Amino acid sequence: MSDAKWAGFLGLAMLGWCWVVPAQSEAPKVEAPPTIQPVAPEQSGAVPPVAASSVPPEQLKALRERVERYWEARQSRDVKTLYELESAARPGGWLKLEHAMGLQGLPVRKVKVDDMRIEGDKGITRISAEVMIGTIGWTKQTVTDPWVLLEGQWYHETSRN
Image (tube, rainbow, N blue to C red; front, side, top):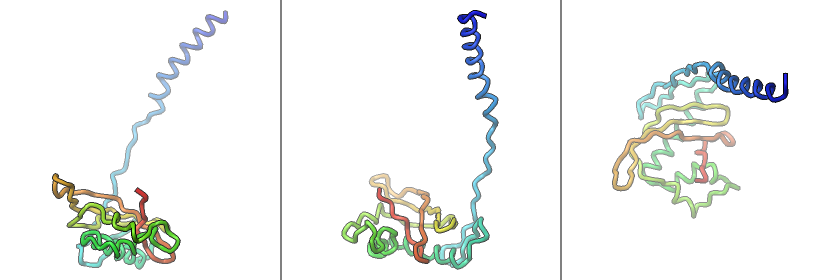
């Protein structure tokens, strides 16, 4: 076979492969529905179950107490408490008290802990609340809120944003 014919054949074969292979390699993806854990009433002190059974219940309780304290402080605009619960405010951290006013964020109300789990030294919570957004008013929002375990105590993982 001549070089020109061989190159044409090879080009057609490659073109056909590009069309066929992705179609064959893309099997339908079946995603499991997200697991939503039951939420205990706000004042009950109960801790929602966690997927990993290796997490001690006292760790979940300690995390829940800190999360609730943090979000109560956000609602009341208590900068001192917010600062104390931030990971970057610990000794040697980059967050200084004089810059802590930025921790308040937008005004929030009706805060609820929807989900909470622990993965090693990380705590992941899902929080829903109403947020005051300028002239729009109170708007329902849900956020994922990260926590970190440092020297046996849970701290809100401070974002540099």
